[in-house]
Image (tube, rainbow, N blue to C red):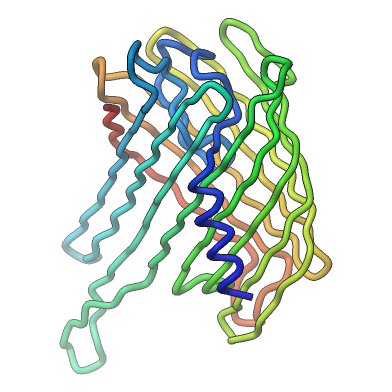
Amino acid sequence: MKSPMLWALVLAGATGTAIAAPDDFASSAPSSTYFTQAPTTAIPEGSNWYTSAELGAISTSGNTTGTSVTGKIDARHEMSNWSNEYVFSGFFKEDDVVNADGTRTRTRSAERYQLSAKAAFKLLEDGNRAFLLGSHVNDKFGAYTRYSTLAVGYGTQLLKRADKTVDVEIGPGYFHGESASGEQDSGMTVHGAAQLRWKLSPSAAFSQTVSVERGTTNVHTVAETSLSTKINGTMQMKAAFSARSDSKVPEDKKNTDTQTSLTLVYSF
């Protein structure tokens, strides 16, 4: 089923994405989450593209030596009837390990890449969307080394205020995964997601997102809490805590992986 899933992802990327309206938070820092990847800053007049690049890195030395890098690129394409989102993210971590004989070996302990695309057709009522979502994750050290999903459904904006929005979406889907033990797993799912965005001040924005895919054999959950602060017109600083969880994992793997990050976001 890998090939059909990848073709579905390409189809989703070719036709569209976004849930929230482009001018919900005209002056806030961009949001970057599984549910609403695209920035929420208003698109400049005469242009219907908005892109942001996010990068964070940590290097340690002394008693503990290692390097970790996380990055993300997300782009939104707004059209009269469609909102398109394309997102690529990656994370890796390398540790300097001291062997029994005293020699040092550079070992990679984390490596994950994710590609997603969402096509959202704008319905007649403001804030309502019919969406098609496709995503694929490669996680070398995760409970699932490969995880692909496809979902269709309906999204709406439950709350829209000057400083807060709440978006939700729900629909049927399909997943195919390969666990760290080599076991293949696939089946139908129910996809649901919700996001709160809160403009704390003209230069700060808070976001809380939860996405759940419930299948017959596994419940896959992704959650992120983030706080973004504006540095200038194009740069933001973002602090985030994210968690990925699966109910069905190999015996030698934990159900939940977490990540805490501090990144710079450049919007253009």
